Amino acid sequence: MKNIVVLVSGGGTNLQAIIDKINSGEVKNAKISGVISNNPGAYALERAEKAGIPAVCLSPKAYGTREEFNKALLEKVDSFNPDLVVLAGFLVIVPKLLIEKYRYKIINIHPSLIPDFCGKGFYGLKVHEAVLAAGVKKTGATVHFVDEGTDTGPIIMQKEVDVKRDDTPEVLQQRVMKEAEWNILPAAINAFCNGKIKITENGKVKLEMEKNDDAITVLVVGSGGREHALVWKIAKSKKVKKIYCAPGNAGIAELAECVDIKATDIPGLVAFAEEKKIDLTVIGMDDPLVAGVVDAFEEKGLRVFGPRKNAAILEGSKAFSKELMKKYNIPTAAYEVFDDFEAAKAYLEKDAKYPAVLKADGLALGKGVLICNTEEEALSGLKTLMLDKKFGSAGNKIVIEEFLTGREISVLSFVDGKTVKIMTSSQDYKRARDNDEGLNTGGMGNISPSPAYTLEVDSFCKKYIYKATVDAMAAEGREFKGVIFFGLMLTKDGPKVLEYNARFGDPETQVVLPRMKNDIVEVFEACIDGTLDKVRLEFEDNAAVCVVLASDGYPEKYEKGFEITGLDAFKEKEDAFVFHAGTKFNENGAVVTNGGRVLGVTALGKDLKEAAQKAYAATDLINFKNKYKRSDIGARL
Image (cartoon, rainbow, N blue to C red; front, side):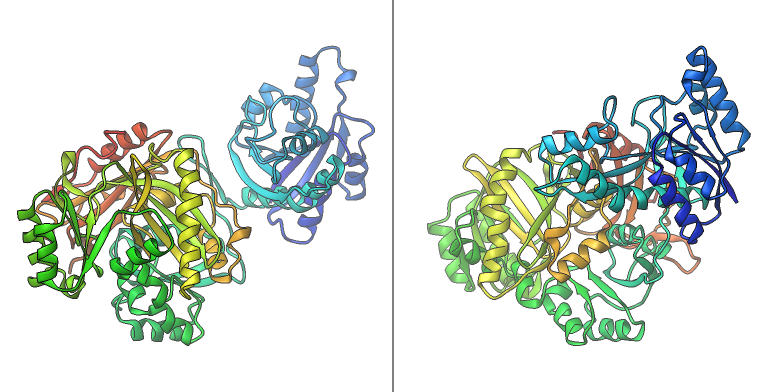
């Protein structure tokens, strides 16, 4: 049983919330061993007495100097032998000696969403007056550890509260207490007393939330780095008790139970979901989406995240997406569509301007785009796509497109059919070699956020691209629910759409999700239920860089089956992660390479420069025989 000492100056409503939740069993392994107030008239002292809790008043006025009071306060706290000191509206500057002795053992409840409306002068009703004066729509409360600053200690948890139009400071104060303070302060105490709060090497809080009794079982479909990042993020959800992944890989196996079902085996996936009573399925890959996996799940009454077949065509057909953009005036490159080789050849010989872009209409693993500088290159590329069928039936129809110049960026978004909410921006490095040379790949690295994604770009895209696309799909009778990936080019004439994807990008996911604050399962459910407008997406004010470790020779010929070493070095890291893309276990249980892109090494930093330095340092911890990486991810910003 952990001893708690509560320091309070006023009425003690937060003290009462703690008492009530200890008595109800919501706060476990905890007892209040003492209450201390600086105010002899504090009603909190009476609350303590009624609950049979020892209580004492230490008024600074009773001591000759502040130093004497500080010493007496420390002695009194010590006398209760506390494991945790809780400031529940204690309007006295906490002595430095107390902070030093109880480092990471003193918590405070503050009536705002730190870092907003906090620091010197922000306490009690003054906080709520400032919130209303600022005209914000959301406020809330924060529980944080106490350090030498004012409201600057590491944050443990926060809860949002709506600000209403007719609020007064007093009304808002009551709502924040009832909806936020009286819930998260006991929850933080419960987490502390039951070992759910960990402090990392860099002084950050890692909170292990207890799973709900009604926690769900999730199935993730896919086997790459994107799916590993999704499983990693889903595993952090308090709503989830069990994760399966089909088919998964060696890295995913640490977090989920991998099942030997191909991502394209739709009947097999549906049967498995029915057998295991899967509560939510998340489709990572494009092939099953375009093939209608969501429709198949919904026909059986199974809950699934992703677009239906008639909406996944947004990615499944380049010709469809170009025609959609043309019809609804969504800015994109000029283009022509061909399903006849000779007609396309004649266009390239007589009408095309170079450089020109050739795109396979269907899915081609992100490699069906050819940038051709000359007519000779274009004719060779046309033959590769339409006659040689390098990408199979994806090349039965092609799009020949104007070559756009500018900065290319990626923006992922959640969509619920009518509402679209964008995630943080990112920037992909598609070419195999440094300086953007070599063949196109699925992506050799990524950074987030993109420095090129300015407020001006954001405003333009929200007005002319993001919502316009979702509305266009709805107008066509193709309601889109899931993730839309917007591939954008920032041209001299403004942002234009290069491509749409109907799912999370790879490796964009590996830099976006580590920066995302939200419980991703809650966002998935909001998209399915059509309530995304009620979700506030939040991302850390930091940066992420992912460097892909590939098999030398990718994307053409390469060997695989080489043992990978150094992965254990990442198990305790809080700012560097390894997402497996092409790995498996060999017959001896060792993790070996099993693809062109093998691993994505992601690191977080205060800015892109620091994140890139950390990511490259982390790649040096990992070794396999034919390891290859680009050396310039994040170098030119």
